[in-house]
Length: 302
Image (tube, rainbow, N blue to C red):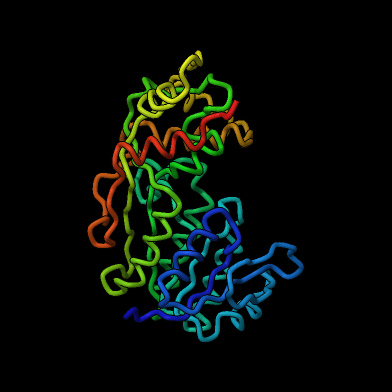
């Protein structure tokens, strides 16, 4: 039985949040409260308690977190660090035992990745969380799952299948770890079920190690007759261009994404996880057939 029973979830209606919420409820071991921004029109379809909060108010957030054992933050990557840090302050004030930040993604503990400008916001949160847990009884766990396979294909991120002209970064043979959102959600449940073993550290999980060329080969296999025209991009040149833009004050989505692609595909940045906690959390990696099924699901229908 987990030492954490009462769970509060900011971001429970997002892409990942809904998966985590579903996994928590299916386990049958947790009482979940979804936090929702005051005035938000989004709805929580799951049968859980919903509390409206003002993310600008530490006092309101503290009241919402009273009696909670865990906060699982699934707010989107674009949410300012100040919002996350107010949640951390509120969690400490409410005597929450464990805080799982919205870290789900690439290895932000990697020394090279931490230097990329795109991680500035995340590092503000992680550094603040570690500082606050040092001065309180609250603990933390980071979930590092590298790139989402399903989301990454759905949104043409790790391989753009939409127009049959995918961008290939480097040679296309650069191996990287990938995970489905459902597996990341399973990891969260596993963290709470292995409460002591996951305290104050990062948990690494993956479904598979793939390459862009491997994903493209699967796409070709299941789209006979389609002509694919991949476009290759040099990673070093892309990073140099993005660095120059950033120094000039240009920080648009194209620049931001370029830094993320460097973290995924460039060697040394931890896109391929060196170790995992799959065994601890009872996560089994995908078979080749499993990977193919995911790619097939996001192939263009026409």
